[in-house]
Length: 403
Image 1 (tube, helix red, strand yellow):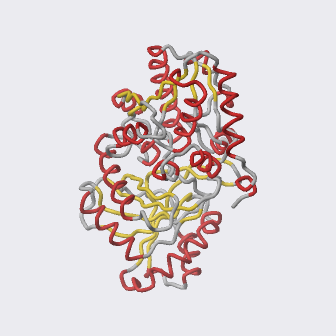
Image 2: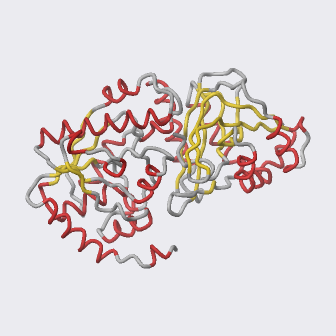
Image 3: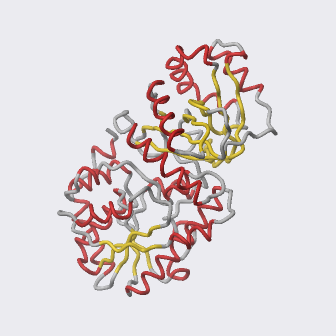
């Protein structure tokens, strides 16, 4: 347990923030976009406690949510002790149109942010809300200010005036906290375990896991893979476990000799025992607190050494950070789990990590059999996926999300 968590007094925080919210908002109406995640839901509960029915809770369906997510979140929030009425705003077409053709991760995040706040502004105007309540937490501010990646819920801190641009002022009740503190707070507020311990889900949703260009078909493949992985890895010991999807296309413009040599020495294997290929899609990373945007390297091992795979995975996870730092052309190392002979448009990636404050993260060492069985399910149910990888990369040098 970190010192911040040990010294955190949730009761005092609730009392202080409730009074602060009352003082700031007075009798004015406020709107909050609730995703069902612990950050936004905790802010909604605190604000409801402070201003009652003057808080309007909305769920913006961006098209980047998991299967059945809007209905599930609405049902959970309606239950005691939360009893938060939720309005679902359908904005799928608007988001898809504004992200059409974008491939760069940062451009996608910025387009998402503008669409998100424009949609909220339209809803706030209809509801006569002058304030926006946000579930921004400390790591969001640190990463956006540091230029690692744009968090959709950080505005004033990077020079965007929400009142001028979108027509409302912003209040952020938990912006000084880290995720473990927010979870403590949610328990004190009486959240059911399904809400307080819910695994983190990014604000832009599956957009940041749909690497490169976004299409409806690609998103559907990702939603199916996500559902499979969340069921299969529920008890694997990871705090966060999810799928990403990329184009199953190799990138020809980069040599792999240095990385292949390092892998050969680390694993005491000959070059015939494995192959390194570079993938076309790029992903986000962070080295020395600065954002990097680079290629991903896929490692394929010969079937003749399958008995050694659990040991190999352990070594690769331990040394992955150094391997990337020595070969900064690649920002992530992916282990190929399964490939079918007929190449299809997409490849899926399994990611499972543990983290404390979300500023660093370590991959979980998953059993080779579990990886194989999960990959087989993905290949079977995701009809446009021909390859499944496991992401071995810690944060840093990778970020937790792919974009």
